[in-house]
Image (cartoon, rainbow, N blue to C red; front, top):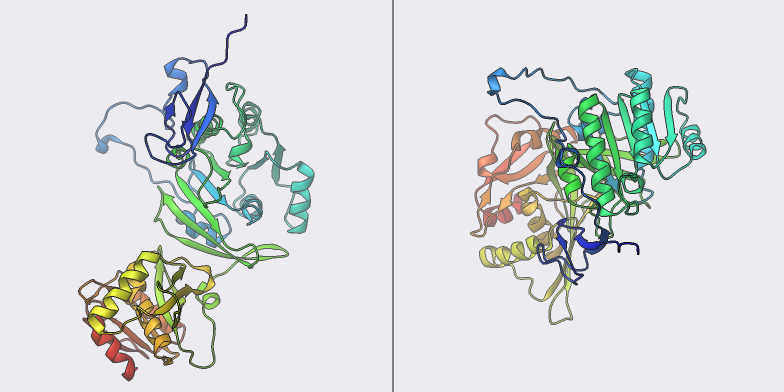
Length: 457
């Protein structure tokens, strides 16, 4: 009689295991995250848990031969910015995004540029498309096709065998969720398969000093599919964001062991592929030729790049018992807090008004420097008062009504001057040490004084 296959349930969020299915994971409390997997036959510890980065002897940091590796330019400056100046030998980069957002297009363009400009051997492994489909995409993008090696394969052992034989310096796996290993019995895309395949690819990258791109699918919530441990195994995690109905795409770094996080690369999708947007502030500004109530320009910062974006607010009378508070591009709870501060310290109430706040261009604001811009836009819409079109604001608003400083205030002001803005309201602590040519800067300590200053700007 054949032995019964033993199964267990693993959480797709925290990767913990339980013997029986339940609606909620007992460890991370996530709902409907337990998936049935086959318990694999245990192989020796030395095989299954080999260090991804290799083993070493105990030594002091002074004894380490710390030769800094130069970054390799990919030929796409916006991709280099998100990576932190370029590719590093032996690095593993995970790129996630919605279907059809342009992940495959971006990578085939990057490989073509690396092959042509940096004279690197590249290998594009597609586990989802045929070689003919890859050829048609390259032909549509008018890329040089003689230097790019392609392989249509989703069996991990065959992929590694081909990579070892050809020794590419840059390897692309599209996508990691469709690759499987014969050493496991579970289906491609399962937690065990994704984790094992990613671990072996990371080990290959470190041992052969090959830069590896892994393409990952995303869930309905917008997070990378598969076990969360996948993001911890790689060196860099990039998210490709944007509306498929819009031509602009944002490449955001959320993890980077070789550079700053929250860097932002901006691309425009055209019939010839992705084109770099070297001046993204211009696409996020509406370019009104007249003053419009409820809009104000904010100088935000994405990684090392100052960025001008337009914050829009609409305040309207509410017929509901609980007025609407709707935000697009920023945190909902932040808006509720700012409305309370506005009422308490400035005396402007919105308890009978619907408040809608939007960040134009699909940008997501995570830094507190947007606080003052949000409040100013709300006041402008509520009082139906247009602000000067050459005005920019930034600053964090505290619960006691004070304006707190933000990082890199000088660089933000200089970026605003480049785009023709001549007036600024900022926190006192961000006041420039020297006057900035062609700009009037008003530095105030409190929100009440900032609101009063709007009459003079």
